[in-house]
Length: 321
Ligand code: NAD
Ligand code: UDP
Ligand code: UDP
Image (cartoon, rainbow, N blue to C red; front, side, top):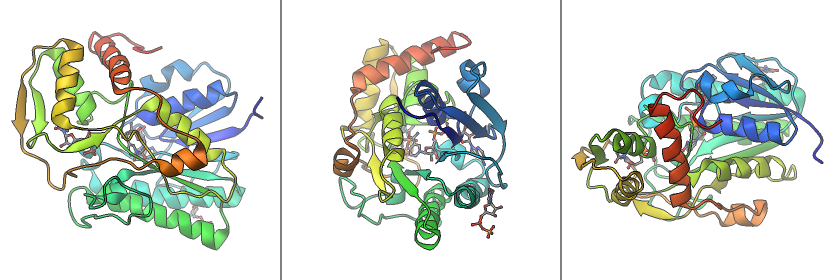
């Protein structure tokens, strides 16, 4: 039996955050979910609101936050290119000032803090698959920079608070993650393709569709985050979390068309600027230190995601509860 802890999750009403809230409540903890609802939605956590150990606070992490907790998961930040480029200045502020405030909180409390960093710190990578020791290939002034550089600066802050203030930090680099509760309009490839296929609309493949990604199911990701938080204090990361099974976006489109039995056509649209050509995590460190690896196969994960969006599009209130 794990001792119950008070756990703060920033960005807890978002896609990954809501699954993490659920997981930590299941493990017997108290959860304080902090979110400003920029991209997160109340319906993602509506089914948790009656739970006595769950508390929801509307708050923007770019402002200071004074609460008493035992652990902090810092997930607050828009994650899809469409959302983080909508207000790029706010994106950088959220990453950088949000990190400073949450680190200040962890410093006052002397408690561990986990940062949801990203594979975007590797930019358009020249090392493949990406290992944690790779410093990345990031454009500092492009449309993705608000997110990439914001997240890189947050990592810098985490390691400086660790060195300077002896803070217990845990940095995880999350690779593309998918599953129920992705925002249907967030423009990410899995949600776009599924929604388009279910509606019988054209599937918008950007560029030649030969660019690759590797997709991790959200339950696997949440387990990895919890395992990281449970490591001894000397484990700081950064550690990659993701599914190393890599495929092209064309293959993904074809797979989703087959699974939804859709008659949608694949059409080509211009490739966005600075779109990484390939991405695959090397997860040897996670395997060794966290004894973690993904367990959900793409087919299985896509099926439950399709089921979620199918219910959502039919207007069901709580598609997965
Ligand atoms: P999401 O957009 O669904 O969730 C982000 C949450 O943060 C939302 O609920 C949003 O309202 C909240 N938020 C944004 N700005 C805030 C602010 N200033 N104050 C308080 N709350 C704020 O995205 P997600 O996919 O769940 O991503 C969660 C985290 O994981 C992010 O930090 C993201 O960078 C990271 N990540 C996600 C992926 C992925 O594939 N989903 C990949 C790499 C990293
Ligand atoms: N902070 C916070 N909650 C706390 C403690 C600090 O939000 O419980 C904020 C505080 O507003 C400060 C930031 O975290 O701006 C960084 O805190 P730190 O102690 O590192 O810096 P300082 O207060 O010395 O600027
Ligand atoms: N993509 C696509 N069609 C879409 C949305 C995205 O072909 O409707 C491509 C996009 O160009 C990228 C990949 O799918 O190469 C993953 O995009 P996403 O926005 O999901 O994540 P990221 O680029 O941040 O990995």
